[in-house]
Length: 93
Image (tube, rainbow, N blue to C red):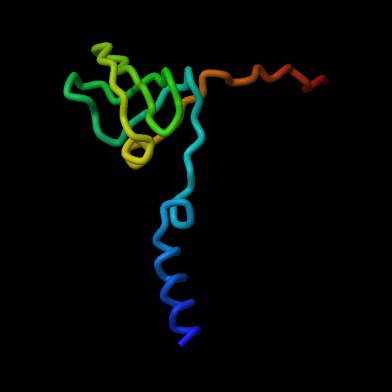
């Protein structure tokens, strides 16, 4: 009986968001390329605020939206980081 209950609890826990999906890391100032375009035609959004809700602005029309993080992460195709470190020229001849 105890084994059955433990197995049932474990099978429910596997379906949890944190165990089955990876959290996509992005920060304020980053740009997100989405899978589907916005009605204006652009599929690039700039991140203004990050949390459980994410505030983004469309690069095409400037529309400001606040979306739940889970819904936004499902639509992300690529994260374009705003803070790309400059690589110094270390190759000497």
